[in-house]
Length: 146
Figure 1 (cartoon, one colour):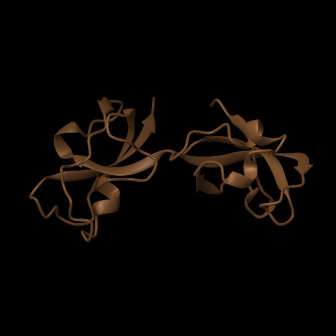
Figure 2 (tube, rainbow, N blue to C red):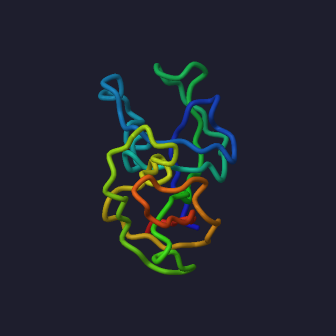
């Protein structure tokens, strides 16, 4: 497990917390710690796996920021059943669907995963919780990027 050290607000600096990295704000421009805070990939999800004692003041976070170790979070997604094989390496392709009001839309288009991402299916969790409105046979899987 290759962890990356980054900085996160005091209230979130707990092992097990997951978050999506949204990138810098304009207030970050002149900060001397910007390179440590902004060393993650925008739009990806991360899980805190370790904390460190390093504390720094930050104008954006009440109570400052702490150094933490993070890894990319595995992502749960609904994919076509025919592609759902443990240890299979796939290029993620969300269904061609624009039904954003669908109850499983977020499983088919999970946060942190982009079209074309190379992934490995680490486990199969079962059938999708609902049928696809377009008639696709879907399975829930856990994916790891890379």
